[in-house]
Length: 179
Image (cartoon, rainbow, N blue to C red; front, side):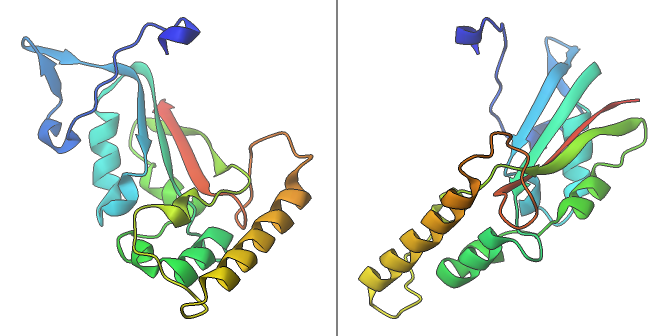
């Protein structure tokens, strides 16, 4: 952020410790931006997590939440099901409507929401055990995976905006601010 000329303080900590607010020397700390990437979908009570995050906002602050796109017909969800089903087991799956619903808090409004990005193998590749859909034939798996990625990239190569759609976007996002 400093490279961009933005003076900021980044706090990476366990937010559950601060359910009654974040205090420094007895003074309540408030922030202009609270950014959550890949957190709320791990909690069964996601709305409670959003309430905690929103409690850190200044009067003009915004909360930006981004989660993996595991919507009903999501390409990424399908790939995870085939290659890394363990990933789906550790998430409470949301689509855009359910993400917006957990952001509907008293005194706040949704400023923007939607699908983000065009395609990514990042979610699929994240941290789980390797699994081949063709038994132990990893070479065939690699060829099929490469062909699928090339197919998607060719169809999306001339698209410059990063607003995605429910099928191919790797992420869903929601931004809220005070009314």
